[in-house]
Length: 364
Ligand SMILES: *Cc1c(COP(=O)(O)O)cnc(C)c1O
Image 1 (tube, rainbow, N blue to C red):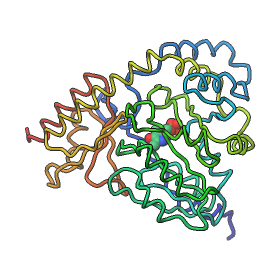
Image 2 (cartoon, helix red, strand yellow):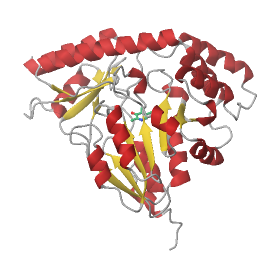
Image 3 (cartoon, helix red, strand yellow):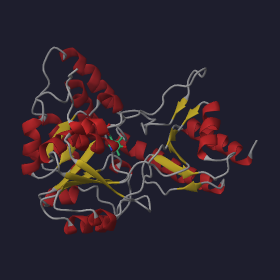
Image 4 (cartoon, protein in one colour):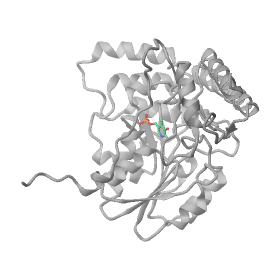
């Protein structure tokens, strides 16, 4: 019998697995599996979202003008070189559709965004992984994989699940050593948390070169994961190509209204960053004292490695935390071994995590 066959690349794609959100028999579990912002969005964003309910019968502004201008104001960008998407997810899809075809090669740094793989495979491209032995994008590993067929290189900085960032000088070195016809995608979903002098989310290169694309999101620090809204910054030429394949109303009106308000609320932004970074430092210190190997994160989550013993490995810790009503993110096959990733939560949630892991490690 004959039947339709999909594009060959699709058969290599394994479905995305979302962070667990429920626990049998537990009313309000502490969900720390998806790097969502525990403080939620700016109150101004919620207000703007509610107000947008009054005009739901209207199509959204297909040119995304208000949001692009708000982003330009907040981040000192050229609004003409900004494009917004239904999550950074969609932006990456547009970019890959625009520049990667069957038979091309795409190099993904090991802990780049999982979505890059899906979209590249769907295009029929070959995906080549550049290892991150230090749990941070490794410029030499990436450069060693470049071939005549390479069309795009993707990194995440800070990356996920490690939460480490590539210093600006290394990002520059990566760019300087890549042929100019290869796109460098810098996924900076967690940029808004980083307070390091030598960090650049890719904005400088996106501003000044022809082949660097920075993607950002409202899903993390801005607390708008449900609305699916992200943005990209790149040369006018690349943005123009993405605009050609963008569906006219890809970002919806309530999402854009909320995002506009969110990005201009600097007080909320600072409050969220401060709360996160205070707990990030505190938890990293406490977890290290307990004997866990903590990766030095600059994002809103912590990756920790457990002892190798059956009683205290990551699998055992996973079960123990669930029994306490806490949901971390297991790092599955292909990720760093024997680790769990846990999002920074509210004060009482973080304390619950520390108490639980203290009990786990001391065997109570
Ligand atoms: C969460 C996350 C994003 C954001 O994706 P959206 O589609 O904008 O929600 C992007 N990259 C990485 C590495 C992430 O962890």
